Length: 315
Length: 248
Image (cartoon, rainbow over all chains, first blue to last red; front, side, top):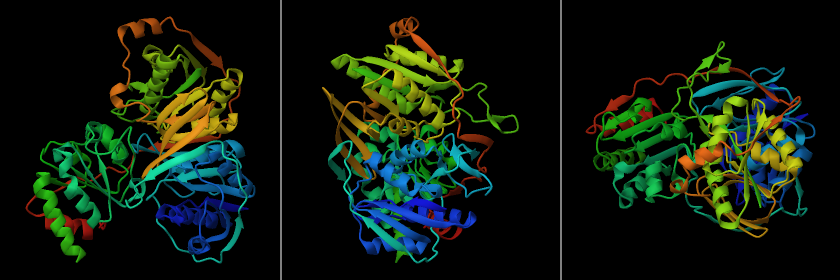
């Protein structure tokens, strides 16, 4: 028996969300009195793989010649290693969302997405997950022999548990059902879905030329930048930055909303954030009802002051 | 070309969420149900492909008779016919399984679902269908072109876009970018009238495989009052974020 975690990497590197998933898997392994094993897909160095040992993984199976977009073969490989596993753990990323459902169908194992609790009853698979755009928490039980879980980034803390870790590599080639003809990534930027801090701005900024201060604030805090729907619709910012319903859902530790009124559709994508700050000229802005901290004021006055104050504490 | 669009019926985002029967059931009293917003992009894309290249568009929904207004709306937007699988969609596996069973009997060249539904945000159904039918699958698609049998699509990945070439038949999970928000179709009077006479086939289900069971719902802890800080005292805000909330 074991708990299997999919150790996702990006250009040969793990991210924090990988270690969160590994820590979650290791906690579940302790609760069910078993070991944690991992599968890694794609080219990656041994030194990077060994980092998983810090989070309690005792065995790693590394497939260097498989790309994670190839969700068919990825799920076949994971299914092979999950034969003895009680649970398979993913971080809720774009590729996990392609692989986990396939794995669920293959293994006939119940799939729970957006899980926010540890196992609640070790005699059956009972967990809590988010429902209705974080407006509710659902307790749910899975009645299959194995369970597949995706955990939201930033929902669980990384916990170290140094363990001796054994690596098995495999360089078998797989035939993909489609060909990847290109990709564009701004690799320098922090990924919005797993950023710990998100600085987001809306129409209150009056024009795309004014985003310099938002980017400066984000850089100071090692944060990702985001925007409201109207701003992405007008084309001031790229669609990939749009958070809220029909855009991205985010769950950072800190979400700062500058000049965003707080429409329900926007809040649906951000209300899993741990702490929210609203900055708005309109004292009636709906965001003040959802936020933890609020400043009534003009972005062009407040944001530069905020940058100044953050610089002071960072020095 | 035969296109299948998977439609999910979800509570309108502005709905107040409540529960009944000791917080064990979602209270749908007074709730306005709508087409899942992510599905609308796929439905409009299918209708546009039909207008451009000629195609038959079928909309499919899993649900009891109460979801019929939602699937009729898909017909009013431009689907040619609709299928309702008569079962409460209790979990993603049974939903995917029943749609797969239908597609096994009635093959399609292109299946479009939403990247996720706006109620549970699980995004599991299209991937499960892909595996059950052994189809290529791409999720979070924000661009799709079809030329003969060849499919070129863009899908969102962390911090960017991946371009993929594949061939029909294929299943995708769609989102904004398949079509733009401004291109989304709103049913007009003629669409609503013709929708009434379009075929709506009802499929009965025997013993669906349900893998998960909902036990209870609760609402997240109420947020405390928003602490207001004067724009002249931003140092206080930073101090609270650092020492009280401990997030910077």
